[in-house]
Length: 441
Image 1 (spheres, rainbow, N blue to C red):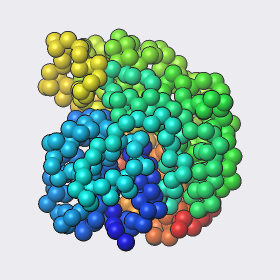
Image 2: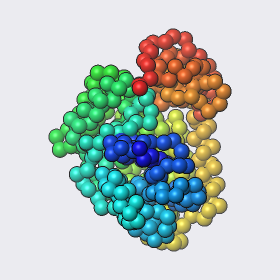
Image 3: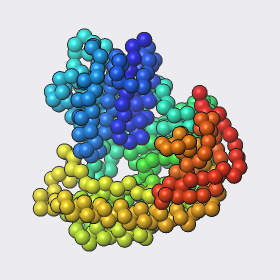
């Protein structure tokens, strides 16, 4: 059997796409392998959200070229492939195929063509493509990534996603439920619903509230998560569905990006500081113990000291459990690149603001975590931790808890007492095993 290796960069949607690609190629007679050396086909599934993500891929392509066996096919897939298209073929003569997120169905034919010496770029959008007939080769036996929506219509001024993923379109609710039932039959108990603005989901008949209730009702599913929502799309129906569906976890990753209304307007986020805070209050009022994480950008064009201070003050007001923090990265083709040059924030200022933001977020996170020591909660053991003989588990509110265990612990639900914290993660002592499930085979 020919072998294929896929290396994945970027978000959970890219991980899911790699699972789809593996599944498609396996159906065509390919064997998946864990290392690129010796593989017949090597695909790099890429991210384009920030420039350093693309630079990392370019560097990695250089490394892979040196290790390819004679006759091996090298391809680039995903968002960077969509953004650069045929330019990748022109700048890197060893790359033979470039495939965007809507063209994975063409992979077997493109690989066959590459064996005949052809080089091809497939980056057309297909607004009907949801890969419903693909069977994903899932990387994990504990949770399943399930795309429910592709593309985005919001067009924030800094974001390349509408260019790389196209306009928003949603899968039919029945197809999502069918896939959820399939993974539950495999013994997987947690699903993560994926979309660029996932809570704007609508299949023409059903909205995101309907979807949460339907997926949460599938027998065998104990946890439902989703990412990433948009603050504007938390309707009363969606919040009620979260609160009333037992399987839906008490965690929301709610991108803030900035705490300044003026900055949010330049970003075209379509909500104000007050709107964001009101959304947080509605969520917390409906869902006791809600874990709340966010995304924040510093150094966006025109950001003043006062606007940055508004970001810090909103972090203090909301008191996030954690935040993913980013320095602004200009992306070719986005409106942010056309803003006046004098709006550019000097690198030294961006660095200082970034350090201040990280210190603020981490300080709040540490305070919140210290206050939880001694609490007991349910965790799902996901994988072996990086250090020692501990295993990484996750609570319903998305806290990382390191617990003692063995390989058989993976896939099990435990009750633990939070016994220590680094400020970011916890250690937990098992106090009772509520329910044990074998890892999916």
